[in-house]
Image 1 (tube, rainbow over the protein chains, first blue to last red):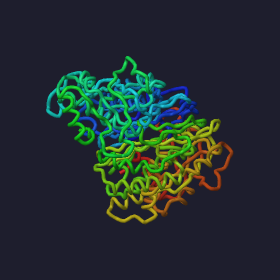
Image 2: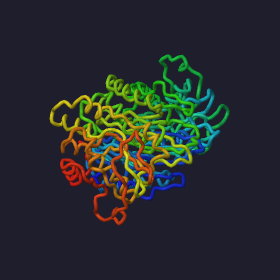
Image 3: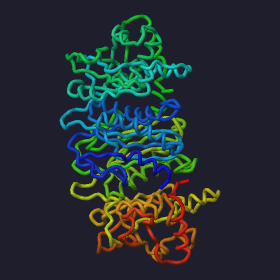
Image 4: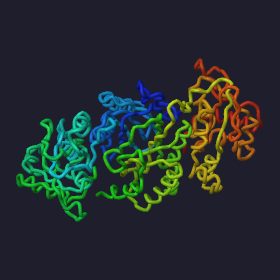
Length: 314
Length: 314
């Protein structure tokens, strides 16, 4: 056994399910026939790109799974299984033990089972591929199904993770709430399930609110008009910097969604705007998302964010 | 759009299937209910660990998928879909174009569809997760099902990839046959399907013949005795170095398998030994795989390989 095979043992603990006839450890895992629709998502985190060097291993383990659970949530799926590709500079048992603690704590909370993986030497990065299910006959929440006139809803907070990044980049300590949002983001799995059959379109906010609503607008060939006064109320502070973090900060893993025409955003989410017919259909260069009204500092923040290129992590 | 989102477009070409209701491009892919058993495999390739820096991008694209197809073959599965996590130092369009050519040529040949992925900045590495199917009621080929008395079979060539690595490490040009084996390994997908219902256990030879047969022996709690005279005949040259490459060289992606008691290895494969009851059951430190008889140079090679630690790539 190589040292890397030895540390793989940390990932073979107690992973079982009645639909899993061959678990992790063979050439492949074997899963029973699946009577539901399956949703497959995948995301990679790379050190110094998606998390700071020196981030606590349990936070890395948590976040690597959380970003995938967030994608499943955005499709309205029930989490089922995931695979883990872990690339490590050295086979450090203590690092892996702590990483696995963070990973499995979140996995257990969402009843998702690790069924396979690969551990190898190289610069630190983690790829996870995860599967969830949606009952046959239920439409998964996609980006291309926003209807003109539909209200736009938001679940979760925005801007805290971006504020943590910006504090750390300036050598300052983020608040504990900001650090928690960056290091241990909470995927909105239950909210995603609750949106099934209610909303038509959804997307998670990984790249920033305006960018991710832009994905919905472009895929659905509509424009989205956000209400500046409502947005101002959800900014962590009533300042332009705080508004920029709210509108463009990535890594929050909130959910945005669109209701069918004539239906209100449910009271456990925040109404932030509505869908309009728009020029996006013709492919002309127009902003797919506009912020209307609201205080001057928010308007200025929206303008800055729209002028900047897409979210690039750090 | 970031430059990385732009190059993702190379992976969104013409990927469709009647079971794929939402293809690559949303938060997740949506797959119809699956009436077969599903086999999930995953593997990572890292530059300077699994392939030399400067390897042609089409070879990297081919190999990243081939190693996963080889795992599916070892389970007796029909390839269905895969996800791609590509981490690149820079968003080079020409590199990605050539990588995608190698990847999709092999994907098309095996009718496997790219359904999702993530492209990000970082040190060059590729993780692929792939799924295949096995009909309900058919037992997938696992490592733990070798029966005492069963004959051991081999499909594919051994040692060529290891010879290519060793030539390149010494600054020499490998033969074109060796280079082909290392850079464009052929996954034994059809042979794996043909073994379904014939063999009981199987494994692909990614770590080296003795190491991978050791996986079968340990999982099945048996020992495997290989026939030295038969092994000598499949060494590329009749030398100790060639025998060491044959017994321990990884990266060949041949298949090894075990037949049920009393059944001969089919004539399109090579019989190389048989399964015996053994000490492996008691957990005592004994070699799970032995090479019996054969020429002196082969015996010496077997001894050297058994003394060395597991295959560590390069």
